[in-house]
Amino acid sequence: MFEIYEKHSREYDDLVKHEDYENNLGTTLAKILEGNDLKIVEAGVGTGRITRLYINRAKHIWCFDRSRHMIERAKINLADYLDKITFQILDNRDINKFKGKADYFIEGWSFGHTIIENQDNINKIVKKLISNCIKICSKKIIIIETLGTNVNEPVPTNEVLFEFYKILEEEYNFEKKIVRTDYKFESNEEAERIMGFFFGEKMKDSLLKTPRSIIPEWTGVWVKDLNHQNG
Image 1 (cartoon, one colour):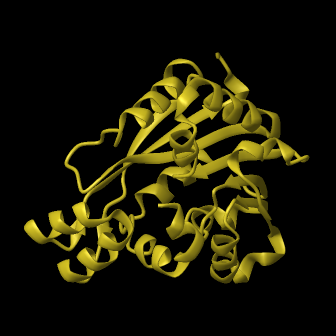
Image 2: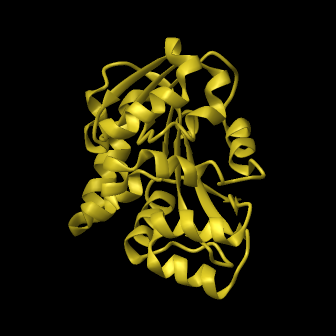
Image 3: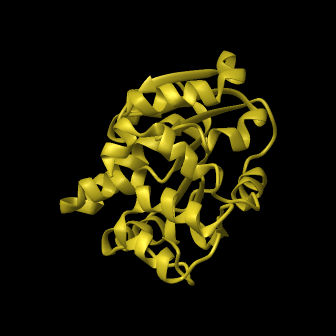
């Protein structure tokens, strides 16, 4: 999977431009963010897919990703806004190296990868990630992660993510919102080609067996309001 983030930003862009065709995630974020001229840290920025959803509300954004390849694509996608973006190559585990203070912290489909890569001690890595977020953020932490693609119900895609989400809700008192972020393609053939490249042969075979141009997807948005902390 990491090879895609290191070498295939164009193909990744081709995937996410078809995602959330009803803009449900954008609508959800608009309700969570309060006011304008916001200072935001975004981790795992990728090609800027999430950034574009809120960038008009931001005064300045610090965009982090561990992949230079993805950041270079994000610079192209966000070219009209470079005057208010600072890009930095930074792993999720090193977010505390950011010395400023933002209003909001946002990550999309990025912490999940870090958790899976460090699953030998899930509680320890989650504690590190969340405590780092709290250090650099004053208003809200927003965590966006998968609840399944090409499935009929929202569920964590593996046991590691199940445990991660459980810790967020039960130990750190994050509030969960479930959002439909369905993909829409011109044809099933296009869906098969693009989604098969990213998600693999199992996804490709599934789309061959059940042809459709709209692919269901569920996304979880976990929010912690730091002005009303109870854990």
